[in-house]
Length: 138
Image (cartoon, rainbow, N blue to C red; front, top):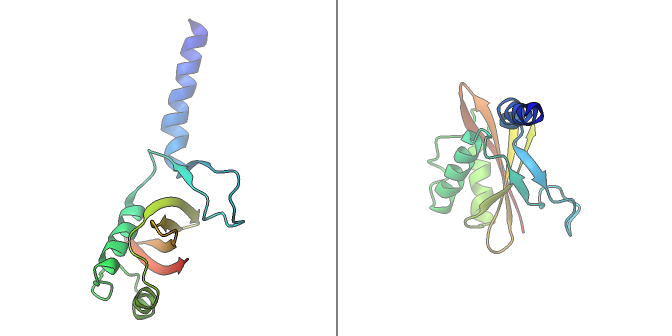
């Protein structure tokens, strides 16, 4: 009985105290590419999804031709250059396959059906998340 209580307590501590701070639970140990970004990851269901929502909203706006009217850029981001990159190398759609966090910056990696990797950088600004960069690799 005591052992069961200790196991349940350890699981509760893990779920409540640790998991909310880890965006990735498990990643593929290898891939055909040496890039970490191409590896698919099991994302933590308890993570903060606000950065992902902003990234997905940005891609939806960009895919529908609304990049220049998107209001979620950081003040220092060159939105004109970002929108030109999207127009010059269009890659529609994509599902979130990985996410990296480096300090305050979160890099979201989306992959579409054609295999293109779309990177969206987001940072927190005044209590909300804003897009700071974009890149695509085919």
